[in-house]
Length: 415
Image 1 (spheres, rainbow, N blue to C red):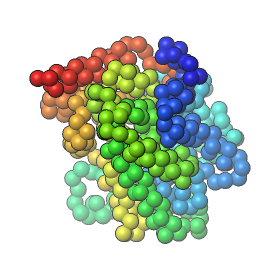
Image 2 (cartoon, one colour):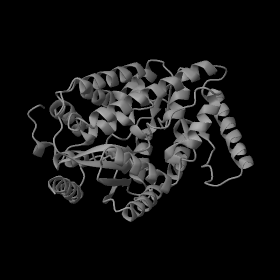
Image 3 (cartoon, helix red, strand yellow):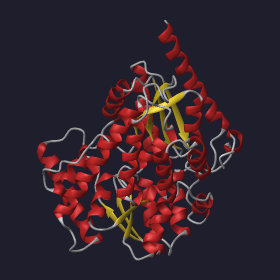
Image 4 (spheres, rainbow, N blue to C red):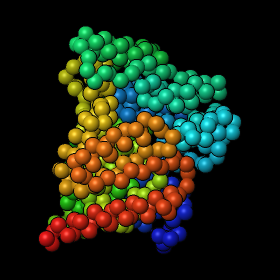
């Protein structure tokens, strides 16, 4: 594998790209290799844990539900990851067996197909917040007929402008829904101090990730854009192994801290990635190879927002959920992105959404308009969750965009 050339990796699967990144691109970093190993093994680990008698529940894998289930002694398996390194058969099955329209989000189809294909061998309980995605709401109703126990947390977004009474009612409803979820998942086992401990641990992990962000700004080529994105994906579920994930972050901090000034600091066009967590992994390779580096991230895995550990833990979940950056308007998120880009001297932003996701495509269009008004170059990409390589046309657009930014950066330094 170490001898595999760039041309040989061009038409491989997502898993091949991760293995190539581990064995070839990042053989200099044991911490990065371990992050990639955790990612590769995550869903198989959850599957083994369930088969060995451990409690596992499928969740979004984000901060609130992951922390809650860990406090109950339950491993959170992220349902968005069951299809990320899966077989292409899952999407075909969703379209043919479940008659899901072709234009439906491939991420939902991939997960739906995998839950059907792997039924009986994986955990059969699933927790879901109804506010996240309507196609998922429908998909999870379908799998209930195939042995899955699905609990839906019936909540919505808080309105942008609301009276205090309205806000208080929303918070009470959220709290009631969390209590229902606890009784469904682990009746009689809730311990507020265990949950508080998990929230404290989550906050600690986010601070370590932010430390990595800051160190990477001085050594942007030490860890590539793809493993950095995968590291962020585990910021709440920890790939099912919290202590190993934390130890890996500690090792990466140590590796970056030990580098000398100027090491792994090639001249790069610094970018922000905004939107979905890209599934077409050779886009990230195209960014790095064209002279770019993604240092600013605006994806569902938010590392800025922390839990308030001084209040009741369930109230802390509610406050976190309603105050999370990804729950805000596109304009609010855009203001944060610009501030983060300024911190890392990023000069352009890539907006990414999955084909068939109406929310994300509208969201990135609103953000693109906002950034255009602020004279910040942006590239909008509509990608697919299907297993396989991205088209040459897309990678050509990415390379051209990054090369343009790199040229502008070089010219500004010589002017």
